[in-house]
Image 1: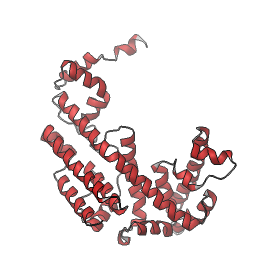
Image 2: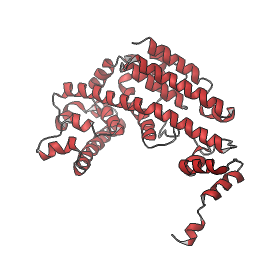
Image 3: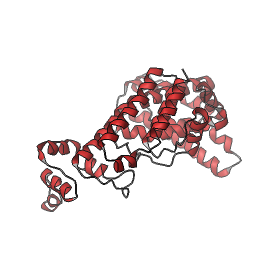
Image 4: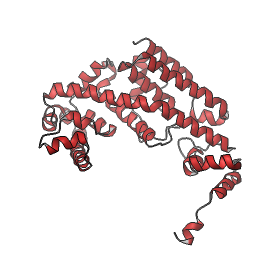
Length: 331
C-alpha cells in the first residue's frame, strides 16, 4: 500500500471523530466496537439516507445508526425463511404443471412444447422480438448454469453428466436462481401459466397468469438483498419499477389497499398473500405478520419520528391488519 493510498484512509478513532464532526455523537469503547463490527460504510454511509442518496436522514447519534441496523436485521431475519419457502413452493407448482404439459422432464422437449410464449406475440413485431430474445437468453443461462455446476461438482448435476444422462428439470430447478426462474416462467405458454395460477386460486380477471412473473421478479430483488445482507428497510434494492398491476391484484383479491412497493410493508403484504395462496400454515402466516408489527412498534419507539416516517408510512399498520384479515379468512 502506498503512502498516498494510506493517506486517504482513516483509523477507527478518526472515523468516530468524523462522525462527531458531522453532528453524530459517537464515543466510548462500546460504540467503537459496535462501529467496527457494523462497518463504517455499511453503517453510517449505508444508513444516512432512505432509498436514494438525496433523501438524507438527520442522524444525531450513533445509537440511531445502531437502531437502524438492528431494525434492518430484524426484518431480514423474519423475511428470509418465508421468501425461501415461497420461492421453493412456486418452483414446485411450476414444475408440476410443466411436467404435465411437456410430458418429459428434459429441456429439449420442455423448450419445444412449453416455453413458447414468444409465438403468442406474432402480430406484434417488437414484443415478438423481446419475447424470443428472452427465450434465447434463458436457454443460454440454463446451459451455462449446468456447465458451471458440473465444473463445481454439484452432486445433483454431476451425477447425471457422469452417467451420460440428460439432466432432468427437477434437478435444474434445484440450482437455478430466482431471476432465472422468473425468466423461465415468463417464457411459458399461456396455458401453462394459467394452470399454475388456477392451482394457486389466483383470480383470472386481474391477469394473474402474467402478473405472477412480475411478482417473481419483485421478490427476486428482495431475496437477493436479504441473502447478501443488503439494506432492505428503505427498499433501495428495487432494480426496476414494480408493475402497478400487482397492487391492483392484491386490492381486488384480498381488499388490501395502497400497495405500491415504496416501503418494506408492501413486500411483507405480498409475501403474506403468497403464503396464504400457497396454503402455508395459518399459524406461521399470523406469526409473520404479528412479528412485523412488533418490529415496527419497537423501532418506532427507538427512532425519532422524522427518521421512522421516512421508512414506514402511516398506513403500514392498516395494511398489515388487512393482510391479517385476508389470511385469517383463507384457511
